[in-house]
Length: 624
Image 1 (cartoon, one colour):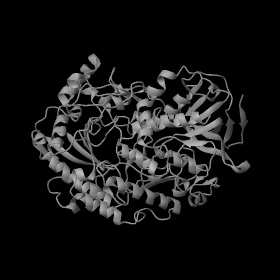
Image 2 (image 1 turned 180 degrees about the horizontal axis):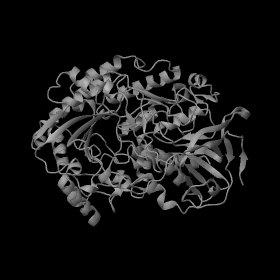
Image 3 (image 1 turned 90 degrees about the vertical axis):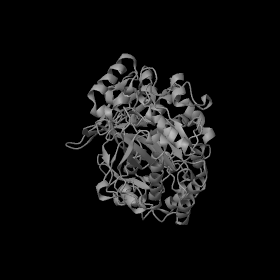
Image 4 (image 1 turned 45 degrees about the vertical axis):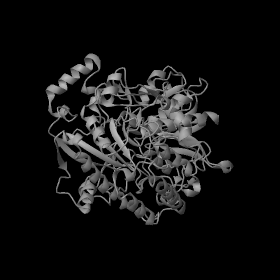
């Protein structure tokens, strides 16, 4: 039965808290919803589907996932490594852009930020790297006031999410791939493995770095410092992408207590402040493209916000939960004055040294220019799942502490240390947010001064970048610059302001200057010289530090690792959620996704997001 409240030519509000039972496959209509739900999860992405799966393990618990996007159709761009990056800027992408970046060059000012708008979220769009950070990256979270959030306590959840398949004996012997079974999972829903084909020139990169005195880590899953081979989120049986949808949803659609309603855009959370505490009493949403009718769905236990780093703060702010100054500006009644909402944005800004290699036979770029070879590899793939179509995400990487790639490490640390921690933040921030960044500044400096936290990632043969024959990429792992997400309209369909503020702290640029110098040393090693390299960008005429800075101002891009806008920290230092991921000041609302990460770790984020979601699921169950 439905309750309609209709005003002529205005918006109708529909209570959809009742309907007929329906099994857990993707549903399309409100009349297919269950009579009630214990949990409503906003966002069916990497974290959202993980939590939905775990909570619905109890057949007495009903779970609904609201997802703004649609399910992919298992087409090539969504599941085949060959088409890595093919879902970007499609219907499966939110297709959002930043405001002009004040600290970058004019030609590089407005940037696209790829985030998933599809069942499975960014796990359907990402670069398929399935690496983990070093223990110090996670231990730093606990140092910010989050008891229980350290490496030893999170490691079981990394393992719980994963089924790891080692490389074949032939691959291991040829490329020197090592691993430690003790740090991997064997029962998880996300497949972690190596492609059946690894481009031979990956070995040149490993050899080059080792010749410079760097050490190869036995396994990044327990020690992500040095040179290593990273697995991908790749199903080893059919060489297709393993996503949160394929892992946590598709095999569980016969659960009668698990529902996913797609093409539903959440407009705000409904709140009640009676009784001296704030509670969420419903989620208001619309069907995509049909904004005239608004629906309300209610949960008996909790609401879980998993809409991602961009849309979590937008939904919170539109609901009256956020910085009072921002809410007042838009005449939104203040439900909870929470200054940290939307602040603390972090990413891994990425740059490239572009090479041409005269002495190689095949690279991913050849897929785009050699139709004959591409067709040969396609035939191999569909015959027996071998060949270059299985190779998508990068595998050969290095995560290096400052002292491993520059002799200016002490100078750079000194430059950061001599700053007032708030010098390069945007103006007008609340004192609690400033206090939080001061604490982050202190924690980062302490760890980056050691050899146990990586400052820079160096990535060889980044598969999604097929514009060049040989992209040799680098990405700063712990930027001191901070961006923000905030509404610029009360219209929930208007993209919020996305300001990465990349390089707003000028010392961040020094890390790139030193990284490029190091890359050029790598290129001069015998292992890379054997490939016949020539530098395309920035070019041999870019020599001085100032010239290198200018190059990066004009070329740095996001690595699509947005995080930090609902930071897990105490409220008095700008936190949005506590150590149980409960929104400060709200009784029955949690945030579970990359937005809660208080300090971005030195790794690609997806394995950590799965671990966060697995841990969150246990915490939610424990509070039932």
